[in-house]
Image 1 (cartoon, one colour):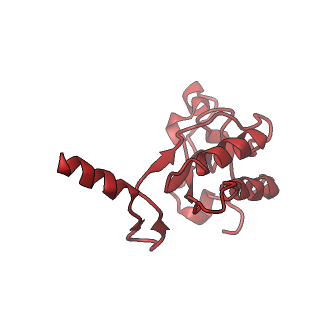
Image 2 (spheres, one colour):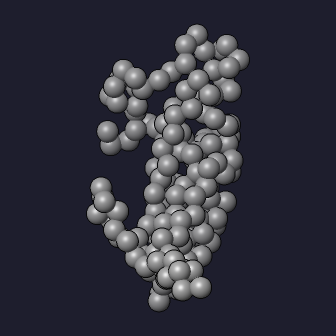
Length: 151
């Protein structure tokens, strides 16, 4: 039917996001929830992330979202989550960001890349064990607890 053809065409049309003004080349998105690929000792992104996201970004999606990137080491949702904080090796994050732009097809526009920032809080396995007296939150304001590079 004609309505199905029209809706398929809409998926391939670019769109502009209302808040950021960023343009997305089509209306398809690829979103990870949690990859569980980070080194459990450093929680930095690694070669597995670089390969995975290069592959996803070359798949034709207009937008690629990372899995959970935790902002608090003590309240991870999983021991193999990526963590971005003052202890992180930022060079691995730069390499990860570049992997989104290495789609290998010069004719194909890169996907918009978005990092999914997360804080597990009470849902952290560590919080549920009772090893933390109180779950750590950012409710005291961004500067009181969230210690990201550059903030």
